[in-house]
Amino acid sequence: MKRIYTIEDACIGCHLCEIGCITEHSLSKDPVKAFLHEKERPISRCTVEERDGGVISLSTTCRHCDEPDCLRACISGAIQKNAEGVVRIDREQCVGCWSCVMACPYGAIQRNLASKKANKCDLCPDRETPACVDACPNRALVYREGSQK
Amino acid sequence: MNYVIVGNSVAAVGAIRAIRALDQDGTITVISRERHNAYGRPLISYLLGGLINEKRMSYLPEDFYEQNRINLLLNSEVVAVDSVAKKITLASGDSLPYDKLLLATGGDPFVPPISGLADKDRVFTFTTWDDAAKLKVISQDINRAVVIGGGLIGLKAAEGLNLLDKSVTVVELADRVLSSAFDRPAGKIVARKMKANGIDVITEDTVVSIEGNGREITGVTLKSGDFIPCDTVVVAIGVRPAAGFLKGSDIEINRGIVVDSSMATSAEGVYAAGDVAEAADFFSGQKNPMPIWPDAYIQGDIAGTAMAGGTKAYEGGLAMNSIEFFKVSTISMGVTNPRDPSEYEIHAFQDIQNYQYRKIVLQDNRLVGAVLVGNVDRAGIFSGLIREKIDMTPFKESLLLPEFGFINLSREIRDQLFAPQGKTSDTGRTQRAVGH
Ligand SMILES: Cc1cc2nc3c(=O)[nH]c(=O)nc-3n(C[C@H](O)[C@H](O)[C@H](O)COP(=O)(O)OP(=O)(O)OC[C@H]3O[C@@H](n4cnc5c(N)ncnc54)[C@H](O)[C@@H]3O)c2cc1C
Ligand code: SF4
Ligand code: SF4
Image: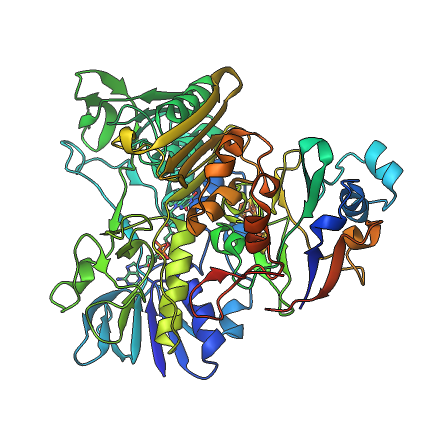
């Protein structure tokens, strides 16, 4: 399956992937409206980490693991893996227990404290390429078939 | 191949998925004495408290049993296993043959002998959907409840009753709540939050007798001599592996059913997984029951793989809990409260006023445990670092940073842990893919 690859050396820490993600998962799909006017503004599903004042940065996100620790830990069954291998959270079913946050070794699940729902990358079901990948001006995120090399 | 699985909860589900990944043709029979399809057992307090409805209890997509071609026998209890003739006997008297048998029967609530308990009506346990439903039915008549036990299940029962506006007192023998998962500061923070929300917590004491008139409860007497008036008692001391029905079989049982690293028991073709099993601990390798949900799933997966002819080895159970009380998130994992602190290096940060606490436990420069209260974001990175046994020497100092992340590790480790395909198991052992 296709996954998102992070090219650390190409990341300039601009956080545009996060903005792309929030916009895609907003109601309006418009960044200004999403940030200023939407009551339940989504939170980003990718996380840009920075160190030494931004000298080093990288964007991290869900790996859609073959054996997802998040799924195994989820007490409500909200996390399921579909036939294509995409791991998604059903927001209705989620009870906000954060067991998935505890279990994911990639730190790839966020707590949305406003809605008390867990949040993770869903590989943008309505798009050809995930929004974060399209938003990156420096091609630090690449969407391609995974090699097991 | 004829697979029979006793129990229909998370360990069974892990096994079903693993079996079907390797064997599409075998018949799978799942037997449960409960009347429900698999449900989120830890959700029963949310159900009691009215936070979720019955529909959200179901753990699986509606078509799961059909998709996986499961013969599901609900309301059926297994009363004996004959591992020589390879058959099991049901309470109805029927027997069923098996080629491979999985015992995933979980735990039974433990009820200690307490004077006055046996002849009272409103004494409950709190481990099943039906337990929660029973409490819910009588909840209009509850004025004051006493919960015996301040572990996970007791606190959950107390929370559910509190959500229904009942006054609740928790009585705990140890010096703090959640003593197995938490250290003192974390236990204190949770107890403080509970008290602020109207749940009374009494520690270092226990209930010695339940008082009343006839079948009715009027209160409980504590070891200290104190009397607490109440009309309902919930016994939540813990669970014991549900292995009683194996008496007389040749399956080795210690505290739980003893299993090896493939979840095989001492009897040929018989496996055990989840709360009923006694498997190796991640750190010591010593065998003990580990009654937590994620571990039950993993053990079920390993057992199912072995039953269907695959090989995968259990890397040992790592204790971990994520519990939220009145909006204070807590996550604890691994060694949180070492008995002999001199062998460990401990770093901690606390801001009790704001319900923030962070503690990191290292042994020989490897991360072995963590407690996070308040800001629990990205806690899973710690569980990954524990499992990978990474040498933390160069970045020890950054472990307490609230924004701790992969960026604090060395480039080499980052590349190794951060491979895009995530965890794979093509070597048979669950491990993380290396390299890009
Ligand atoms: C209130 C509560 C809250 C919890 N919260 C958490 C939490 O937040 N996080 C966490 O990690 N864990 C939590 N747990 C623990 C978790 O639920 C268990 O670790 C997990 O359910 C174990 O799964 P299992 O598949 O081994 O067995 P179980 O879920 O116990 O299921 C075993 C099944 O087998 C059936 N059975 C038993 N004997 C027989 C027989 N002889 N014949 C037929 N059927 C039989 C039982 O009726 C039951 O349906 C909680 C538990 C409770 C009770
Ligand atoms: S959230 Fe974490 S554990 Fe779950 S699939 Fe993504 S990377 Fe894997
Ligand atoms: S927070 Fe939601 S998705 Fe995560 S484990 Fe809990 S119920 Fe499952």
